[in-house]
Length: 228
Ligand SMILES: [Zn+2]
Ligand SMILES: [Zn+2]
Ligand SMILES: [Zn+2]
Ligand SMILES: [Zn+2]
Image (cartoon, rainbow, N blue to C red):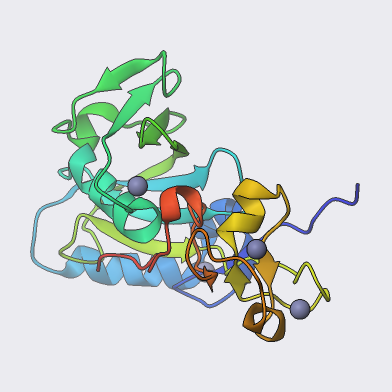
């Protein structure tokens, strides 16, 4: 098997494009980020610890986020964020845990980041106890200062939409057929042309690909946009 190229994303501060590992290092030294941070620190408001989190899907590490989260924000805010950008289909239960999503120690949603986080800490987020999405949250770094926004979380980078190929012709796909996936155990990727006469509709029409690791799970169709 040929190893697929790692997905890339863009640093929101300087526009450089990198892998998630590259960004993890880059964000520590990005000149434009340092300048933006300096500016934020000169605004009114309280100084608090602000955490750099690297977030990724456990099963498909091509889906990832780099965010800053303020110390006064709660796990509840992070849960809301993850639901909005990646997960929410029909209001399933979710939780965070340390030491494994299922057998680790579950954390109260009201926990504040600053009471819990320190660089090196790893949490697991579980969404939906049936068709489960599992997300790893790693605390990469911390700075003392002021956040870039009034919101609890600030998006610094996310992976570009992964490129999938049409199962019929190998062209770039923009649709996914769930029936292919579930009933025929085939990749259900389809291009604009081959989606037209595709015979399956047991799970509804094929739907557009969105930038989320939950695409197709429990009928998830997006929109996979950040909440703010
Ligand atoms: Zn940068
Ligand atoms: Zn659902
Ligand atoms: Zn095609
Ligand atoms: Zn199909």
